Image (cartoon, rainbow, N blue to C red; front, side):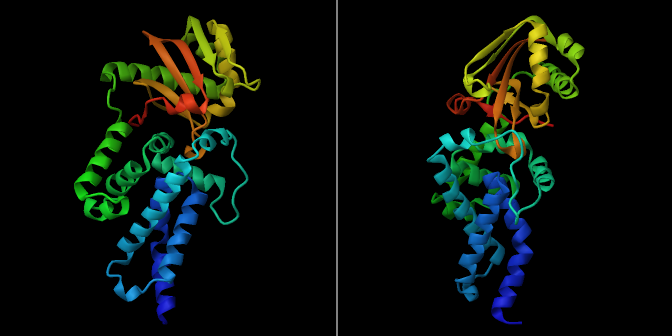
Length: 294
């Protein structure tokens, strides 16, 4: 076997691992595939004799490529939320089918992908490589251009953001989670009467202009009207997942892990008293989102 064939075989052996790293870094299969292909191009033009740990070398290359892509994405943040559609888009011929990516997104957690997208690029890289793939900080440091201790701090800050710095008490969290889970089930099943049981009689729903077909803010008052509005939400509810929104249990709607809109709730005992539907990119960026334990 020639050197180029051996190199290609070794790369293909590590491709699934590299795709997993890139997917968690970028939250998009097509972008992850681009990053992995770029790593192959760099490997094919390198001198393999000088590479002692091929997987480590490839992880470093993919990490740097992803970091550059994240920084480029962050320089044009207005595109990130404006371009998302709640329905799956036509799939790339060389990527997995939508069902496969849905499985990939579920394996990571749609809410986690959403929260990761709110991290600074270097924080995201440090967290993903260390906390998910157990890459040592000594190896992460040169990728982000920091010392190992600084890379550790990046991962620590990201971890606090992902876990939520100021979670409510466990009892409150469990109560809110049960209400939101019931709301999601009723919305998905189109159960109008169950929604009425969950909503306060005087509940208020407010949707910003980015969340409405007319492009204008909209408000509904009263359980009957809000429940009917939730039935309209049922098509999007299949993409929804509970998450912490500004310290309370809410919902993120994230097709394949790409954030589309957020539902923030307020509660009184066992009822939802208000619903704020947020889709405006600037408002979404100001939210404090964190992952809820399964």
